[in-house]
Length: 178
Ligand code: G4P
Ligand code: MG
Image (cartoon, rainbow, N blue to C red; front, side, top):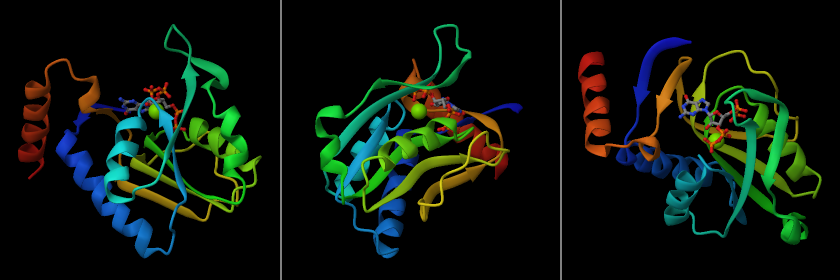
């Protein structure tokens, strides 16, 4: 992975989600509900609701332990047990911020598929172009990454302690690459 960090602002994410919402609908996929993978998928999912107004169900899945090392496999922190039956026969738009190793995403897809939804479409802000540790099952026919990027560490605005400084970093990065 390159050392150079990749900064994204709230506005960049908002615009990316707006463009993606148009793509989703143009593809003929009209979701019944949104599933957000927390915590990174929460804010993108909420922005999506502005453009595609559907209920959001939240799931928490972690692939990192307290020492910031990968667990053996992704683990559910929070799941939608009491409403699982609401997934059956439904079109689900699954949202996360980043497709990195794909381990969390594909685990989540497999768990959701157990409830026999009509279809699941996967939407992410960033897809890292790298070798993935897991693949999506063949049931996934629609995949919407807003942006394909090299294997760099992405700095999301919700992690920023100084948001003005964060926004300036995105600006400098863009000027540098212009
Ligand atoms: P994937 O299926 O989405 O590829 O996820 P993977 O299992 O590889 O693990 C993803 C975890 O690593 C997620 O955190 C994700 O947010 C974080 N991550 C991966 N690459 C980046 C990056 O470039 N920048 C940032 N900021 N985070 C990255 P998580 O443990 O699931 O929790 P959360 O942060 O979403 O709460
Ligand atoms: Mg995440």
